[in-house]
Image (cartoon, rainbow, N blue to C red; front, side):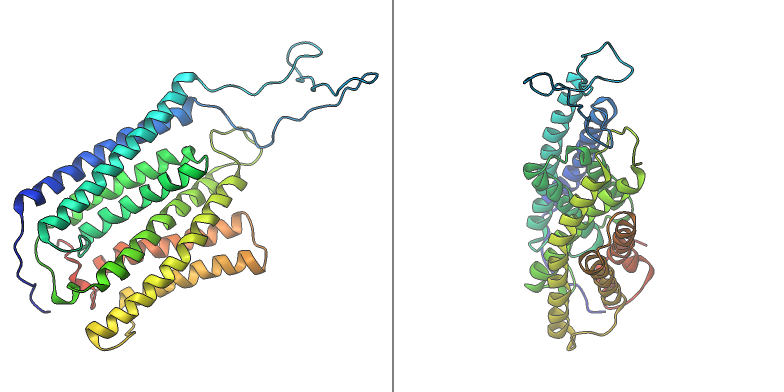
Length: 326
């Protein structure tokens, strides 16, 4: 294995980066608690909207249906309203998530400045960046879609991911192997990180889909809503992952003189691509919807997680420069 390239490290900034990541973990947990409070004490959603019964008088407008078993004739059925403080807790969760996002970003930037390179050249930095990408995907989607119900699950995933990185993957900021001193790391790895963040949001939706029971009141939205969000996230992330795989092959040719060598990382990146492609193909051509499609997406998500973390821990190969602590 080639020796690392010698380079100066700003130890002060490296320490600041480590502290920022620790603070970010706490902020994500605080945001998760706020989101969870809104879920627990907010409005309970039913599988179907309240139905109305047309009671038409002579030339009069249709009247709302009576609420069976409640009140007297003519009582209007109104959905239960969430507690005001629960709604405020959800808003506080969004604010805390944005603050944690900024802390996560600051931790990545200070690490990169400290070592004067792209800050995702080892497993610790890579996982920190993926957690940032997952929260970024959630917050970006939240701007356009009412998906605050995902906040508790995305932020706890980010907190656990960062905690795992700090406890088991952390390495001191330092130099990297010559193969990683390339502009391709900004292209290939960045694309993989962005796609992985969106895939995590889709994976969270798929898990919640299987938890959600049809026909029962729940704090979660209908299964159709969860499936729609998951599908949109995969549709966006799949071409980005495809580009990451192609860029990786181009980088491999430049670094090792071949485009593809069936290295464990390459194999599992391809397996992940195939399973996500199978999900999209089954949904587009065979019309698969619901539980079957969500199970395929979860299998693909499992392949993604194993490719991102498991391959570097359990296999050796050309990608073994990821500096996983022993």
